[in-house]
Image (cartoon, rainbow, N blue to C red; front, side, top):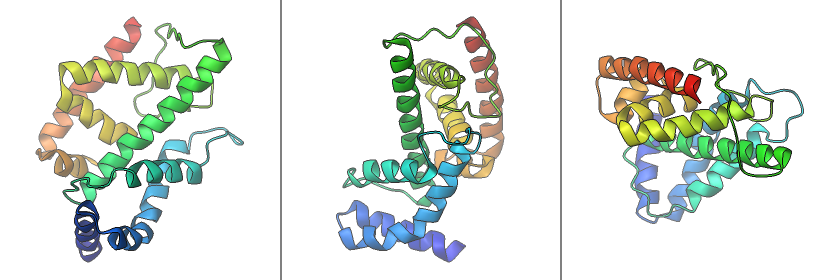
Length: 193
């Protein structure tokens, strides 16, 4: 796995420097991992929802390919960015669904609980929770960007404590402390919505 990680990192750096052939080589190496990440997002969905794993991967991939010249540090950084992109896609999808359902862009949350151990399904009635969580995470990012990033990488990205620590250049202990404090803050914030 270490050799593959080095290969991915080298290809990411080459792609970031404009080498389109590196992107062609990179795609089959990361596609399975992107599907796994998308599957983590979508595994709690009801059968027959409109956004499938493949569609989420392809939409994220298209957005990433448009980011020519990106400065990728390593594979963990790449997958952290993928997690962010997939989060944006899911939240945008949930917002559109709620907007269409309610006839406009306004969304009221009502203070129900959001289980921070499980991503709310964007196609379910819990789509409003995903939007509320995204809004609360945006507020947290303004107050404490690092803790918001820890939540994003662990909760939305499915990264382990160690991977999150590597992506953010922190110790695993700091990641766990930030994770606990950010979860407590988000729980309190969501109850007040």
